[in-house]
Image 1: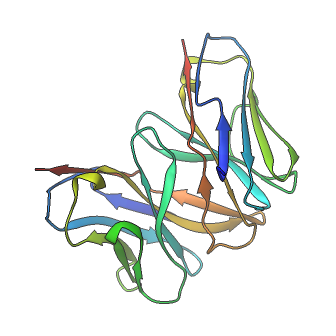
Image 2: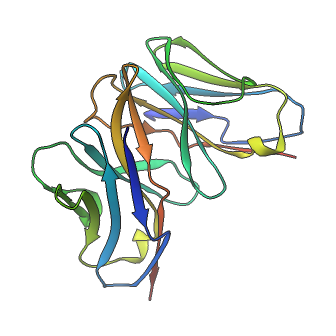
Length: 115
Length: 114
C-alpha cells in the first residue's frame, strides 16, 4: 500500500522568502511521487513529478523537489515566494491496484504568502 | 481545447433528488477517474474506468453509479442525494499501468445539497 503524509496543513511565508512544504511517503514498491497545486475554485495542476530518474526534480513556476530515499521524503521548495503562489498544495504517490494507476493524495498544505 | 472538461461546474439541488455529472477528455487517455474533495480539501478516489471497464471501485454508497460509454467519457449519477454528498467532484484521466504518468484533472463540479 502507498500513502503520503504532509506535515503542516497551513504554511505562511513572506513574499520573497523560501517556501518549504513537507511530504513523507510510504510505499511497498519504488515510489512515483507528485506535487499538485490547486488554486481557489480550480482543478489540480501538476507541478512536478519524481519517476526514478534524477532525485532533484524541477517543475513549473520555479518549484523543485528532492527525493530522499533515506528519509522517505519528497519536500517541495521554492527559493522566493510570490503572492501568486498562494494556493493548496498536494503531495501524491502512485500505486497500482487491480491493474489501475491509482494516485493517493496527502491531506494538503495551504500556502499563504504575505507582503 | 480543454483537456478534461466537466459539466456542470456548479450544481445546487435538494435532498432526495437524482443528479448527473458529465466528464469528457480529449487527451487520448485510456483511463478516467472520479475523485471527491470534501470541505477539508481531502481528496479520495471513488471510481476508475479503463476502456469502459470498471477497475477501481472504492467504498462508495451504491447511490453513486458511474458510467463510461467510451474511453473518452465518464459520467457520475447520484441517486437520492444526501446532505453529506455536498463536495467538489473531480474527474481525471491518465494512462493505465503507467505509474509515472500522473493525472490530468478537470476543473471540478461543486455539488451543494440543501
